[in-house]
Image 1 (tube, rainbow, N blue to C red):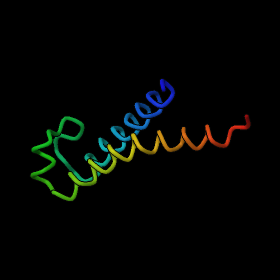
Image 2 (cartoon, rainbow, N blue to C red; image 1 turned 90 degrees about the vertical axis):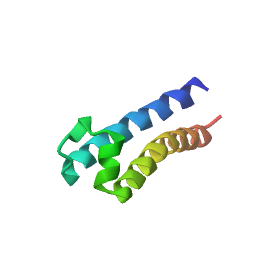
Image 3 (cartoon, rainbow, N blue to C red; image 1 turned 60 degrees about the horizontal axis):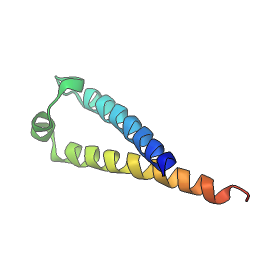
Image 4 (cartoon, helix red, strand yellow; image 1 turned 120 degrees about the horizontal axis):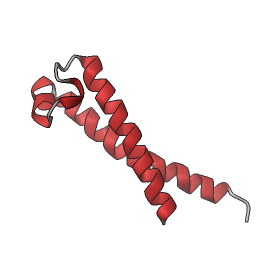
Length: 74
C-alpha cells in the first residue's frame, strides 16, 4: 500500500509543477503565487484544467503502479 501512496504523491507533485507552469504560460501576473480566486478570475476553463491535472496526476501514478505490478512475473 505504501508504494501506491508514493506514486500518488509523485503524480501530484508532477501535476503541481505542470499547473504552476501552465499558470505562468497563460499569463497570470502572480505566476506560482496565484490564488485560486486569481485563477478563477482569469478563466473557469483554467480552473477545470487545474482540477483535471490534479486528479489525473494521482490517478495516473496509481494506474502506472498497478500496471507494473500486474505485468511483473510471479
